[in-house]
Image (cartoon, rainbow, N blue to C red; front, side, top):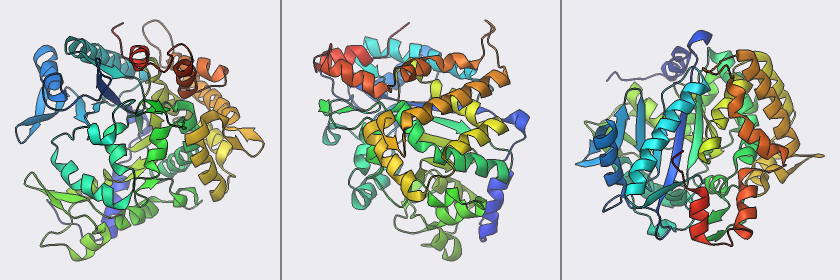
Length: 447
């Protein structure tokens, strides 16, 4: 590992990660909460019907290769895809970077068939929700992953809901490429600007611990009580002169969690990367690998690493999972569409951005902004993304372009609603606040 000593070296890494337009791909990460069908409680990592048993079955039945720590399976790999575990046993498919959303959808559908097949044999269901609907944070078992032994106690010190974020919530995330600094900053600023719209469109976590929690996206609200040093909107993103240097400055001052040496995590909590870069710590000195690891421990709504991650959406029912990457591919991968999306939010003040951000968690599309509702702006965003996808003309075997993955979102939006609105209506109505009926309604099913 080569030691890094200058801030300029860190900035240069971001420049080196740019790709020409023809090499741009879209990656998607899909987290899912698993529950015991008999009780609605979060599945454990250990024991019969636990996460490790599920992973072992995926290895045996479907050719995945296990990744282990201390004798436990903590992930899987197959071809260019991986399965990861979140701290509370949420299972995440980290998909292959795909040229188009048809590829993304096919990969996710295959994963869904495999995991539902395994889960049904074990009395387990995976739910298309943004957080665990029944289990409290204390009831959920930590997975035996070494990095979480450092993160968990630190989260408890710096925020009131960090462990809830780790153990109860689930998201769908889209990963995007950029060509150079100018393109990266345009996407960074725009994606950060539309964060309230993304939250509102995909809000899907209104039920927790067996009851309505008062939020459309309680998952999103939990993030605001996790760690203010590393989460949320980043004010500097909206500067007209924003650059990689600004992001490096931000990342340098965020307290570290750890470094990795010889397979062991060394606790560096409370030490900034700036301190580590300039002075070292406990006989260790900063390397490129340390920097890339540190970047994975920053949790703003839009994160830059070797690619850009949009992290604001609740996990969804399977039919809506491809809608997020499709929306962002259409909106951000065409230069004039990117400009049109920025026009939707460019004149907001910082106070207005923060108000819309917090209101989107509670009210989603019905949050007010000036004389509009977020619903009005979300419809414009969808229209711009639709045009972008039509223009890109990525066709499947049936001659359909990628707008087919926006259709389920369009249908809901046409009603003036988000997934949480539909869920709450059913929860209070036909489901009768019955948890068994909620599980049946929201469980992934074999198609």
